[in-house]
Length: 257
Image 1 (cartoon, rainbow, N blue to C red):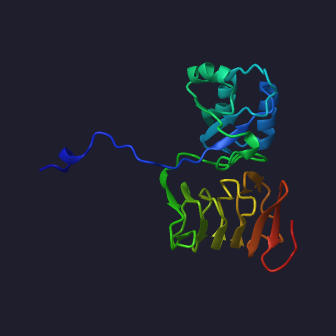
Image 2 (image 1 turned 180 degrees about the vertical axis):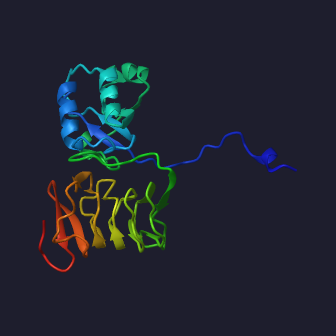
Image 3 (image 1 turned 180 degrees about the horizontal axis):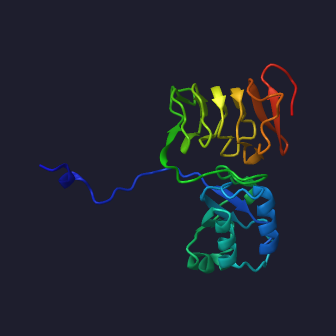
């Protein structure tokens, strides 16, 4: 009998989607356009249709928002708005009318757990990848770690949810690796690496051969359009968060950039 006869028309399963947060401190589209242009440096593929949550908590009370204009502006920079966070109830109907979902905070903002990979200093990528993302959670007896022994290809995203991520093979350009804990790459790290994705500011990124396009710790980002600092490039190095600054250090010394 044909296998298709046993297949359900639709199945719903729990999945993990990583989205960036666009945290607005103004609703002025000209100011936002200028800021995004500076952030991306004119690179048309800086963002890759990243799923985006618009966070309006920092806007002054009573701010009028041109949702259609804001959505169009974000899409201009290849950000894909899907939801709004921290919007007052009065905005809910208008937000929904523009096809966005509303995330309602259940705790004061300062007590909320940060969303995965929030945009703070520079953008992070969270595209719908051509290669399905690998996701793992920390399991009892597994010491809170996800181990990958194969190369991470361009377009592939690995997300270690609730644990550290260890990769023993090369991370290629165009790949993205994410962990709620720290990231350890015992090979060459190209592509993008985001540690502490759920807000762990103590997380770090380690690599035997460091040459990433972008790194993030707990939502604070640093990009390397002009190349990774030469004194640390292609050598064992670590990346950590100090306040709101990304530091680069040699694994074997206290030097930093």
